[in-house]
Length: 413
Image (cartoon, rainbow, N blue to C red; front, side, top):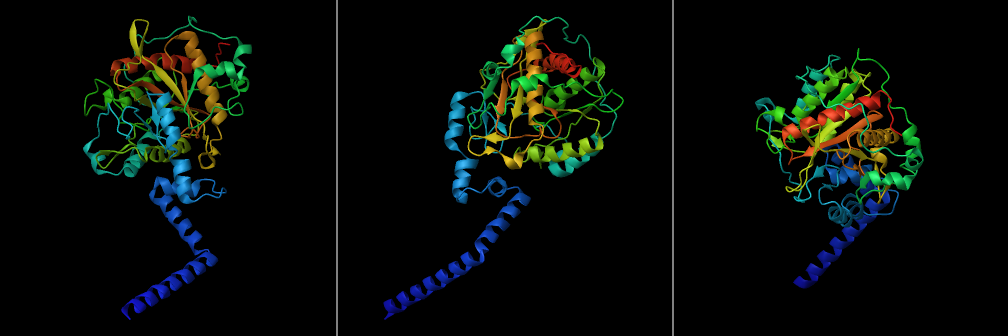
């Protein structure tokens, strides 16, 4: 009798669940519930569900398939690590070291004031943005004996060759999660673009910021941000102002240090929001530079000699909002992708001409980063954690030189 009662209870329960599922399906409650979860995820920035809610879901895929096939394509990341041991790009678009595949980074100097360790990144972002949204340029450091060249000593290329896609492809390293297709990369068109600056230095022209402000170097001093990427940004600002006469805003806001801890999970979101405010307050800004240092194996030293100075090598970085899985990433739309690609290509050719052996290949990845606010936007990797502070600061001198040449309209082809 007891077994009969148990079977009856199970049968009734199953019937109730079946009816409930039928009603939920017919009323579309499940879709509404999933939509609500995704909207909530966007608000609280859960990257997995946020991606699913923003992605193009016209394909008949479950959320599980979308997550593992599109957000975490393990095979693609593995092949990328094999192809480029210096660098791995994670699913949400933040760079990490290949030798620390679990996402940890090396060479980081934790460097924040007491206020920063007790204040949220959003609050700190708003505070620093208010301080930086002035039309007055940052105070310069002392600039003496700056590397600058007026004579081409390196490689120049025939324009007919440069017009060819396959010929120009030699300048690029492309991750396996994306493709620099012929429809995206059109060198003949990009070489024709005029990227000269459009106004004088009476109002701000250039913005420099750091999505990853805590990046340090082999001899960085804990607690001294002048020995981190922030100090490198200070020096680049000074060279551009003192030697070349540009009006520069250096945003030293902290976007990757939250409640006393290094946290890069939302750094690009914080940076994007703050940079938008700075540009809104200073619409005259034409050039935006996100200055980083790379993460490489500890036995790699990215350095060369320029005019007797040990100088860190530089890499230009483009996010093209395109993945092999999804094609164009619609929620990461960048209206300035062509201009971004043209700028890195023209800068690379200037560097090849004036400073041979100094530049690394242009790096291409699938995501957008913060390159969509202005046409003349660049993400620049200056050296790596194995370089000294001095080597990386030295690299700011030829960088400022070729940027000045570009903004004056010089071309070397």
